Length: 510
Image (cartoon, rainbow, N blue to C red; front, side, top):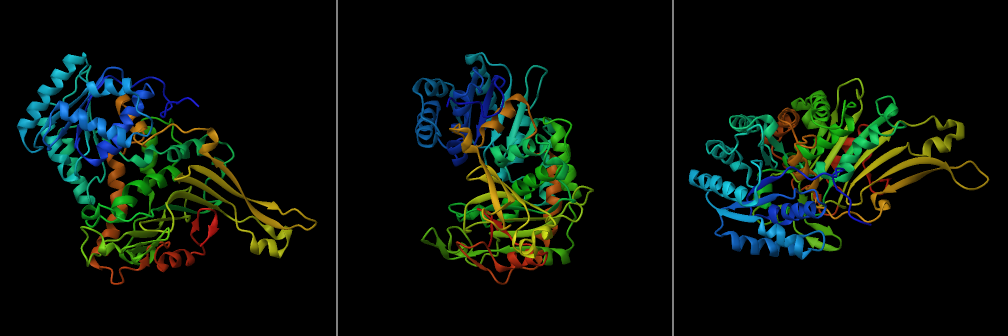
């Protein structure tokens, strides 16, 4: 099957210069360069463009092009076509400099002007901050001081920043205050690569494009919602970062709450711009705040010990490189949340995420209220599980609906039958990194899939009370789950107290 545009658009992005801070880092070589190359193959990268990499490492245009060629051959998600890459390579440049030094940004201004003149580019510039979060404010300050964030009627300037957007409510507000001194909110693109995944984007299409589901997407018919983001991997080489972050900051505050808001939001007036983001913020603002007492009863934290993953022995978290051997950082979290509005009142949203769990999967489970099955006998009422809808986000993207059907035979015997749809049914997938749609959207000024500041603020207000209690009362039982399991027993007890169980892929109870 021929490649199809990943973004649903057929027109290329605006001609621009793309400046990547952190050009020598893992994110750039593993994700950003392959994503830009994919957009070029799909004819969604503008015909007239240039890429300027900025980093502290020694180098020049020639060495950067050589290194970029090595990286694209190692990490491209499709075969590299010589003619296409040769053009990309020729349009790639490098600037070495200290991000704290104003001279670096004076040199960058000169470099941008030279590149724009060489390729006859307009004044549009996209700055991607693929750097440590502690430098976000400083780099934007330097860009502003150099006049590089100034827009004109014919030339936009946009800045993409990676998560985390602060490490708590106070630091998130401080970061936003710093950014807002040099940028308008419309210039800031807070990226969340989870929102670039097909199934996450498909949540809106599934809900609002199918008349059969939206009428029952409420508390009258839905009993509970479960969102699971499970990883088999440990912290790998990110121990230094992760030990100061933890899964609550790393996954819940951004990825999981973003998915929750898409599941729970009201129909927007359109699927572009602020219409979607307005509705997502309303959901986050409606989530019931947790008192310290509720944190103790409605949240669970865990840390993995040694165990087995796919038959291989793996170490405990405290034995990982760059991790404090006495660390109390959580690698697992589960909690019960409530969205206090007319649609979702009293419907529990159970969320969990963790590392070194039994299976790599991200899924949303919608549990419907049970039908009155006494018509088919007491046994059917007791043994048949209520209908469940599962949105599989990764690794096998698709949708499963668990329905009731009669088992073949002379007797009326009910069974649960899964109706499955897989994205593989569409045929060959277009090779992707997950960043293509987001990069393209930034080039055309489409903000739907990016976090607005009020959603960041709202999400921190949800998790901050939990962080406060956990900091005041350090865990005493870590490690409390073995690698290769589904987390600590307390996670199961959390649901059992509400009369529920966690569901795993395929649809089954633990």
